[in-house]
Length: 82
Image (cartoon, rainbow, N blue to C red):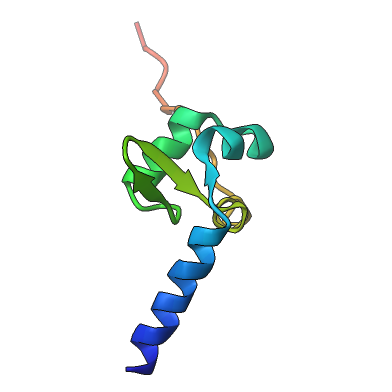
């Protein structure tokens, strides 16, 4: 029962500090579309209210502290041997 209460407190705390993904993008240097992808894939804590996604600065900081490398991944192709 205690763990449920703790989870509820965390959600209430997060709800009070919500920022839009557009604001989070401006503050973090990530694009809003990338943050939406992270939100949909549950890679950052987020909440969808209506059609808009919201997160917290703390959730974005935690994601960035994991040292993510967004963007296209380089494919290591072998040179053509003609």
